[in-house]
Image (tube, rainbow, N blue to C red; front, side):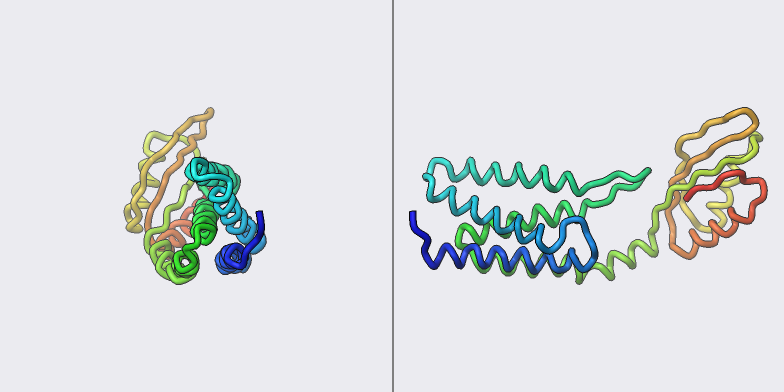
Length: 210
C-alpha cells in the first residue's frame, strides 16, 4: 500500500480544518484545544481513508465506529457543577471536528473547509447573540436559609415577582427553626443584581447561595 499525493492532501485538509476550530477553542482556554481538535480531525480522516483501502464491506462499519469513539471523547468534556452543566459546546465541537475529518478523508475538501468556517461562525460570530440572550434571560439558582415561619418562602417569591423575575420553587426543607428554600429564577442580569443586593442586605437570611 503506497501513499499518493491525494492522501497527503486529505490529511493536510483535515489538519487545517481541525486547526481552524482548535485555535478558537484554545483562545478561549477550553479543555479540547488546538492540538486536541487537530488530532481528532486528523484521526477521523485517517480512519476514513483506511476504511476505503481495507475493503468496501468495512467502510460503513469503520465510519460508524468513528462516531461512537468520538462520543466517548465528547462525554469526557461534559461536567456537572451543582445545577449547571458545562462543556456541551466543547463536546459538540469535538463531534463536528470528527465530521470534518471524515469529510476530508472521503475527498470532500470543500465540505471540510466550508464546514470549519461554519463551525467558527457558530462559535465566534454567534457569541454576541448568545451573550445578549443570556443578559436578558439569565437563569440562576438561589438557595436561602432563614428563620422559619409559615410565610417565609412566599415572602421571597413576592420579592422575585416585584423585581420582574420569574421563579420556580424547588426543593424545600426545614431543620429545627430554620427553613431552606431553593428556586430557579429567570430574568435580566440587572434584575438579578438588584435581587442579590436586596438579599445580601436582608439580616434575617442566615445563608445565601447563588
